[in-house]
Length: 380
Picture 1 (cartoon, rainbow, N blue to C red):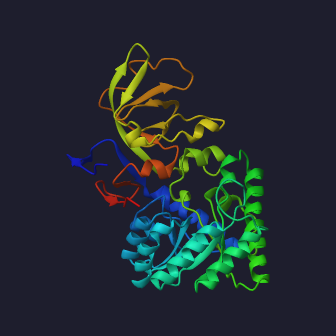
Picture 2: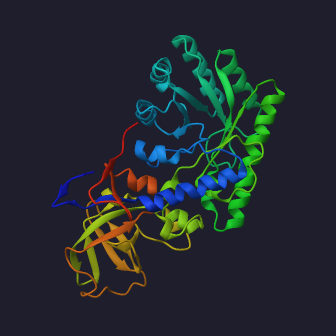
Picture 3: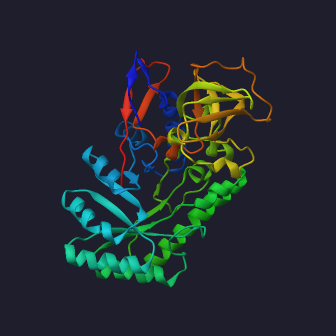
């Protein structure tokens, strides 16, 4: 997690951020959602950086989405006071959340079952705190939440209201979109996502709950959605950086991936025809999400230091501080292909997981001087 500089060069391994690519990614999704008439509530769990979060927020953004209370506190400390905590609430965190409420943070909580609604009601009475709640809808059977037609949806809404808390509406995350392999599948996933929350919100309203918020979100569905009628906001976060998994889904190309890990070659395994670099899983993460896709990228794709992808080389394996570069076809890499001390970049499988390994971002771009660093926050 070092941000050390020696002789004006960051010590490897370190995380690079191509600001031009990031800006293009932000603007692309912003324009798409503007055409569909629905604002973005950006998910900042990917970037965990106030400098980046501010760039992700369009003029009509209602606020941000967070996944940890540490994120909520950090971004609130930087002046962002409208937040959605998009994880089913653990009752043990409600005392901490009540303190944030008293300090002025408008933190919308997520409830995904009736038991949690009951516990929230008990805490509301004990803490004298009127929590604001979104009910999570299970759109794909892959995670927590209420099915749109589940009687427990209305039961939970009643428990929340009886406790003096507010049911603001519904939200969902279409995790099944990550299983898609073509654009049509992603379009269908986006429509199922919309149908699930809109029908759930209609049930709540018919039962007497106002439910003004209808929130959907994932980078794949936000990219391929065609119709957002009845939806009031979209949440997405990975789009800011993109990654190899998104490229495998057809959401982006490798030219859109804005972060990479800068690494240095430290040796050659002549018996195997493989090169060693100083970026292992501590720098790249253990994420192997692309293994389930048509093209398995190992632990990341290798690029020249300038950023051009080296098409036939990938990170085949990692240990804690070592990465092993191999040819995709299994043939040995020749001893003259690289040299010890040469710097390369590694594109990540999963932007969130790789970025989480680092203390911040070294900025690169057309009009940027070297040595600029943006820190990122950590913790829960």
